[in-house]
Image (tube, rainbow, N blue to C red):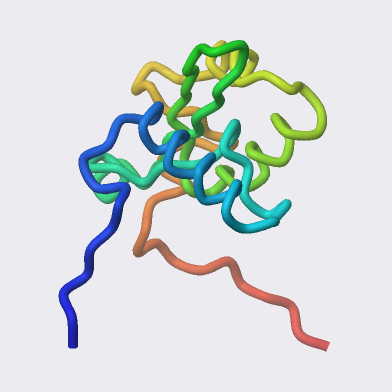
Length: 117
């Protein structure tokens, strides 16, 4: 077994975008967008959040988003708002955008009772 290595470790969002851009150039794919992507960083494990990064007009913009909504927010930025600045305005006092209060996103709580039948 080989140890895990990644070209993204310890890279800035701009450097990650450049790596993605060169990867897309080598592989015809519409699944990778080097101008809008999510980064899991050192804070991700402790804050249950990721960083949405957008490269627009040569500028790097980012916003930290809770795991419970990061995918939906990527889709919203890509298809509706076209800019992470609107999400940046919705960030809470802890620096993370959430769609529900932190206590509802906490791990280890009781599950919602399901109605069967």
